Length: 150
Image (cartoon, rainbow, N blue to C red; front, side, top):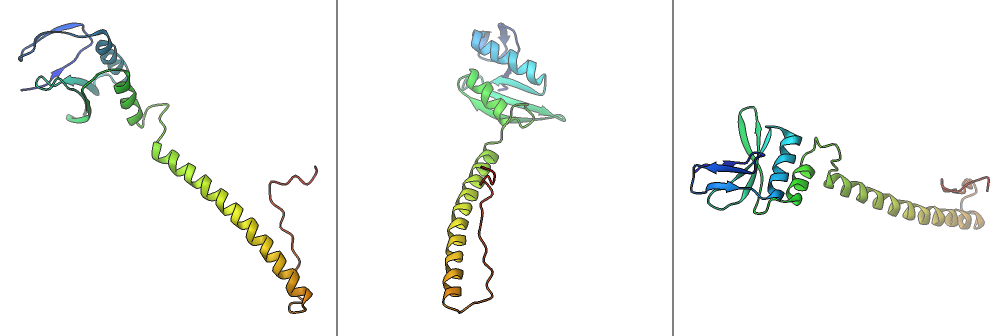
């Protein structure tokens, strides 16, 4: 039994076991918004056996399932938009987590580097004082975020 493709009309007749079908306002609104955003490249079909809604993509003569849901509301449209990398406001969740992890790693590295530099300066000082390393240069680490003119 084939799925019924939903169109932006309130009522239609299904040749399957469903007969005359009337769409709720919420469902009709989502169907209209998907149609406005994607045209014929994405459609919503309803499974006559389970009454689940299937978001189906159509590309180069091939149909593919995007996702299915038992409730067609604004969350389903948000899910479709979040999964679409061509969407203008799309943010890749994996990339966002990766950037956050990179920032945490950089902060840890900076904290560790400060401790290492300080320990190195103390070691150089004590080695010079004991006369074990006369030629060690005396360097002072100045963090980049320190304002020299304040």
